[in-house]
Length: 462
Image (cartoon, rainbow, N blue to C red; front, side, top):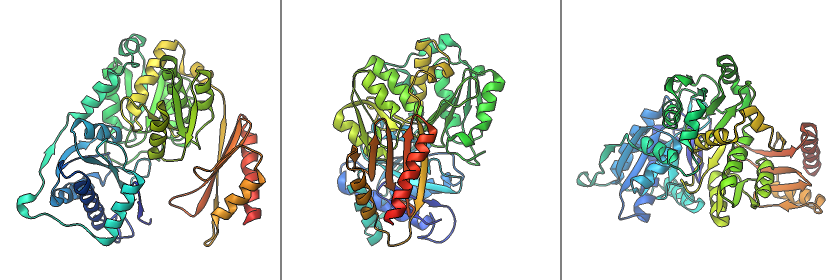
């Protein structure tokens, strides 16, 4: 699989040729470029926080990253096995100049990646990413002499501080959660969710013998495809029903995405993770919300019903965060199960998502299935068209825009067209020669038909 370099980091498969896969040489170059950028922009702060998920290659990659940062002259605080949101919070707690998360998120076990953070514990900007990529290309980094090497220290307390901050968050109700005596099944997908999620649940008052963990060995040998999608969660659904549990929880390997299973073994719906949690937050705190424009309209409905205003953003966490700051959103995220609670930190965080969802369940006195039924029901049809080399995508989008010029249109990220409460979103992939076409409607048939109509329009233009 080709090595993928982008403004947000570098990712690829382990093993193979430098420049083609995520080789040790590429890891060192990219880390050195990031370290060079840190030293240029934070000359008074030489501290970097590093953490990793449970991947097989994690320890190997971590050693390369730590040694390279030390060789650049930066001090490293190593969190070891951790989660993406924990590293993000760790940067702020440690007052570091930045951080690196070693995770390929939902990708299979052969993948790994470096995700880069700034001093606020947030993903670096597009401008910073471009500068780092140029440094890699030019190999414009220098290593320090022996008496200037950075230091190395381990900090195993950050996860507990993260969990403590979640439990103390004003809208989290540990006493109410404890009283409910929830029985919960967790699919930890052989990664750091096996450490973080049970610890959180115990801190929230769930009894240890009421926490059932599937795939709990942190060995990176994922028991199934690690993306928390319906087709990968059969074991969790079956176990929830078999054990008579109140709900199931699934996270991805770095614990920034989250979805739930109802007590009858049916899926709550990945798109509705953010919808439910936003609805709960908006009951207690009036304000605006943000999600990327490929996410369900249900968030807009819930927000407007609560008296707030909904704003769409371009796809990508950094874009969601930028829009949340611009409109002072009280809650935001992505339809893939990513929840961002800004007054905790600006990053997708499954731990705060779990705590808020359990608080909602405790307060509403409904089962998970009954809770799901109270939200607007929409269906998203996800499709793609492969592109031949030389295809002018801008021309395609321009022609489609002309055809639907009487409809509300958003061109912030590709092309989004609204049809009353239905919509379709077209955007190119950053990693593949394809156009993604997402369509949503209250009817799955209608959603599919909208997508088919747009695909036909695209083929005619091509």
